Length: 469
Image (tube, rainbow, N blue to C red):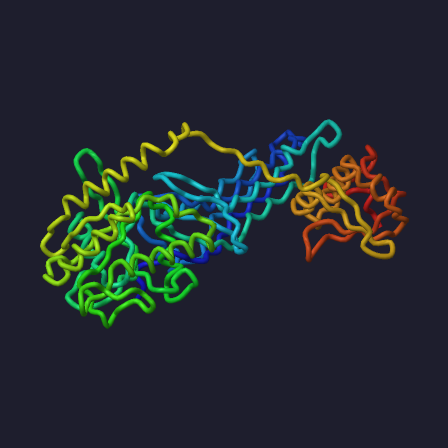
């Protein structure tokens, strides 16, 4: 059974809006009480919210479909329907929300950050709201709009100040356990950590979060092993700490790397070069710059005598490159205080160099312009398609079992200019006109001899003489 998930595919569906009500007030001695149908309730939204207590996307992995509640229909006596219940999905800090083609919709960082992934449909208007001086007692109501439904991909990128990177079995889990109160799995036999762990470290007045990034292998930036899944977690780290194993036997040497100066031991400097190459490869593939991140080196396992000698030799070579080097042992805790303060100083410097945070405000991103609100195109011999947000929405709101509702739709389309646009496009009597979403649009036969918008088209409630056959 999986215990951690940092990438999931989910299906979200917002609630449908409730239908409006067509009702007439009935009371003794008041035969003309007037329309009193209430509006339908709004459908619920599907919302992602950052929860500091969440550490994984496992809950979404187990339940990948989330649906919000539907709005309730309106009723008589001007009673509006109840709104549908929102669904709030708790996600960890650092979750990115994307559509299937990889376009990022939201990057959720910071406790309480919210993103409305799917908006609920609007409720339909009741006949009381549709009454006007021309239409005093409408015999119809508008239908509720369907809620939005879409497929999303969520990725978790660990939010930490410092990231421990290195080969498997380099001692990263032991190190984070010794530095903080985190308790990852630590054992006396070789194994690979498969999930990142976070720990809080205090170094004087500086408090920072350190992440144990699972072990990398050569070729990780090209997708070998689980490298791409692991490298994702270093993107948000302000400081990178190379954890190098100075006690590994030469049998585990990196292919092509220089020989260790201590016989029978792997060269830690070669390990650093390989990991740096993988970080550079991931940088070019993901478009994320890691070159400007401060680097520190922790030469680990110096409690082994041969490893202590090798670490002393490697420290000289690494210091010549301008790197800050600490010789440590997670087992005996030797050198951990110096390492914690070195990381804390690098984190403090990175925080000081970062631009000041912008004041909290809501950012409104308007939808890109989709062209004119009405567009008529020819779809064949005497066949035409009407496109636009308003016509499509009005069609979804219409009850086509009610002639008066269809006549109301015709009046709205006429005021929008559909009649004139069809005439300019070359439509003739009997032209087939398609309006609505593909692949199931509503089809009309256009008859300019029955003009929409006329004040003389109303018959008994629920009918329209213009539509009589």
